[in-house]
Image (cartoon, rainbow, N blue to C red; front, side, top):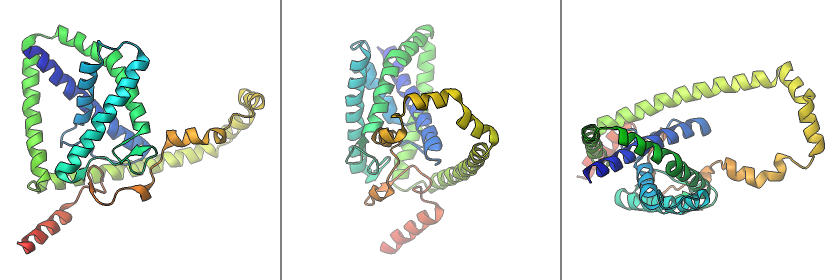
Length: 280
């Protein structure tokens, strides 16, 4: 039983880290923004770890059909994400994600496109990742599993203590460091984006690119045989896939943690402390 508990704990941590990496890269690639994702200070998004455990307990070994797995993942992760957002908002009067600016959202806590990704992720978890992890656990000695689990558990407890202390505004140094790190990363992202745009402009204006577009026989033939196939004919589908945020719909009544714009810097923290001292 203890080995099983340790395995579940490791599954939670592994998918929490994978979720953190995925979300960080997603924001970098899609929005060109450096973000600090997740509830904790460390590189963890616990909601992904809990989602993996839900898939492990309620889907893995129970459902085998890919469609049923996707549907179950869609519903279960949707409920998890909604309840997590609701609970954290009520406890801390803050939120770590806001989908109010997205299409097909429910109270800004979940939205259709995100749930479709979670459904696909549930299939990968159940069909690919969990079988691989259990095969790996079978090869590991029990003492090694205990040692790794205990070490990581200790680190996680320290992270939780630090996070809750931060939410009570008692650790200003870590908050300042977090702001500096994310801001500097954002500068690098902006510089890289400028370089990419410059390369794209150079390519689009080159003679080779123009010839490839205007003289490509297969492309010309395809357009001639299928004149009805244009992106404009699928604007609603493309709109849902792109789903660019509408900043006018963002919530203004509550703090959003996670981006360089929403992490207070040292001046903000000092001003808040001065205000609290004045009130006292």
